[in-house]
Structure formats: C-alpha cells, structure tokens
Length: 355
Ligand SMILES: Cc1cc2nc3c(=O)[nH]c(=O)nc-3n(C[C@H](O)[C@H](O)[C@H](O)COP(=O)(O)OP(=O)(O)OC[C@H]3O[C@@H](n4cnc5c(N)ncnc54)[C@H](O)[C@@H]3O)c2cc1C
Image (cartoon, rainbow, N blue to C red; front, side):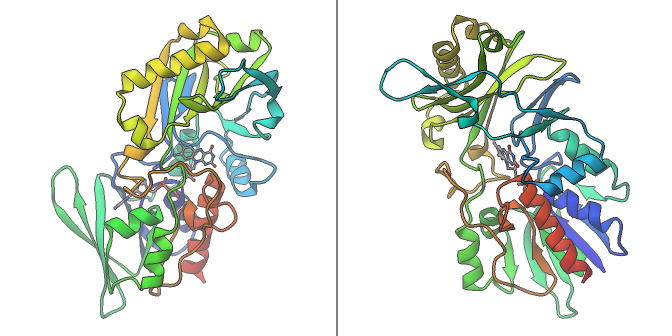
C-alpha cells in the first residue's frame, strides 16, 4: 500500500514516523516552505529560542508527548511559576497580586523550542520524501480504488498529480473544507462537521519580548499576568536557561482590531502595557517577535475570526470513503487542540491504515 500524507505539521510527521516502521510506503506534500505547520520557533541563536506557536505540554495529562520526548532524548524546561502573578482588571484600579497557580497549571517547555521536537521526529525518518511549497487542491477517487491528488507548486505554478492507495489529510478541518475539492463530493454531514470545528488558536497572535535579564523575577514576580486592558490578555515567562530572558503574551484584541494596526503600533502598545505591569525596566527590551496566526492562510480560513475561549467539540467527522483519513489535532476527541491531540490523531490514522 502507498499513502500520500498531506501536510507536515506534527500530525503528518508523526504519522510518517509510525509508518516508517511498517511495510507501507508513503510520501508527503506540504504547502509551506518549511515543515512543522503551527509549530514555529524563532531561533536567533542556539541558546535563544522562542515559540511563536505552541510552547507547552502538560506532563501529568499528556502521556503520548511525554513518551515521544523521552524516546527522542529531548531536554525539557519546567515553566517558571515562582513568585506572584498579576491581575489587571478593566477598571483603572491598581494591579492585583495573585498566586501563580491561579494562572497556570504545571507544564513544561522543550529545550530548543517545540521546533526541536519537529526536527527530531523528521531526522528519524530518513526515508521521508517530502515536497515543500506544494499545495493540494483536489482529490479524486478512481475506478481502480486508488486516489489521485492534484496539487500546485507555489513557486513554479506547475500542476502535479500524485497517485496513492490511501490519503491522509492533516489540514485543519475548515481549511480542508475550503481548499480541497472532493470527487465524489463530501456528504453534507461531513461538510457541516468540518465547518463546525474552528482552527485551534487560529484567531490568536503571539508576541515575544526579550530582555537581558528577568528583572521581574528579582522583584518577586513570576512574569505571568492576566490583563483585561490589553493588548495582551495572558503573559508568561519564557526565558531560555542559557540565553536571554523573555515574556510572551496572547492577545485579547480580536483579529479585526489587530488588522487595523501596524506591527509597529502593536509593538508600542505591548511595551506600554509591560511598563504599566512590570515597571520602567520593561522599556529596555532587546527584541520583539510577533506572529498573527489569523493572517496565515496555511492555518486559518476567513471563518476563524473569534478567539476561542474554551475547547470546542473536536473529533473525527462521519466516514467519507475507505482509505481517506483525517488526522490533525482538531480530529481528536480527548486532547483536540493540543500537540497531544495531534499525536493521538496520527496514531488513529496509523491504526486504520495498518488494521
Ligand atoms: C499560537 C499558538 C499557541 C499554541 N499553544 C499550544 C501549546 O502551548 N501546547 C499545545 O499542546 N498546543 C498548542 N497549540 C496548538 C498546536 O500548535 C497544534 O495542536 C498542533 O501544532 C497542530 O498540528 P497539526 O499537524 O494537527 O496541524 P498543523 O500544524 O496546522 O499542520 C497542518 C499542515 O498542513 C499544511 N497544509 C495546509 N494546507 C495545505 C494544502 N492545501 N496542501 C498541503 N499542505 C497543506 C500546513 O502548512 C501545515 O504544515 C498552539 C497553537 C498556536 C497557533
């Protein structure tokens, strides 16, 4: 059997990793010019790495990622939660101190950023044939029970066709619905199901601000904060052990509000907020990194415009055709949204392909 995997996020890579120990052959196409999908680590130097996509895993609740990290011999960093955290309400009252445990449960980061996990998985699949810059746009079921996937090379414009016995799509559901033309057409209940699964974190943006020193720690603060005044809603310490210190924040501003700003004006607003919360030293930052996921057409659709406040109902859509599978974090019922869910979805596809 030959499988085409569409997408090289952690779901696609983990599926290739699992398949590499089976008799099934596979290849992969990826729309971006890089692997990793929503995993995106800014790496100014080997000691400085800042995750603009996922940052954490929760070891007490996420056994699959824990096992994988152990297998790949990656080092981890415990999320810094010492000291007090800050709560800024929307009423111009002074900032309150709260316990750090009220903001964040016990979680870990990966040394080198989450990109280290992506690269380690990639390195252990020497047989992986992956074509970057190649965006799938159609799938056709052939009379001989194979599938033909059509894709376009974004650089050359060349239209390419790939034949396979089975296909695994790892795109977020709404992107799949919007960008892939299915022949035969997807049943109505599958379309509705895909549209009802918002892209996890698709409406979010992340800012990372680096400093020479974690001055907030010296002041007895964790660096963590919740703010209803914004622009950042949640702020956390993501200092690197041997490199610079850093804070990162998720935005309270909606994608529409952000799109009316320039990156420079967002940077100004973020720094003013950090000065308000942590004092004048916050003005003396080294670097500002920003990624607005709501503008990334390889992750979101125009439907992903609202910040998701709690986990939507995720899981597999109703069945379509034999040997067409959907993997990706939004297709996992128990941990959909997280890296753990993405890994579980890859196992689900693998188990179906090998049963
Ligand atoms: C800001 C942010 C913070 C997050 N924080 C955390 C966290 O702390 N912990 C956690 O566990 N999770 C977190 N997440 C979620 C985590 O990133 C995802 O669960 C995970 O990365 C999803 O992986 P995936 O492979 O399912 O999907 P993706 O990473 O989206 O992979 C899909 C792949 O398909 C490709 N693709 C798209 N369209 C096509 C096409 N037409 N043809 C070919 N290829 C295509 C894409 O380019 C991409 O590479 C966060 C996400 C974001 C954005």
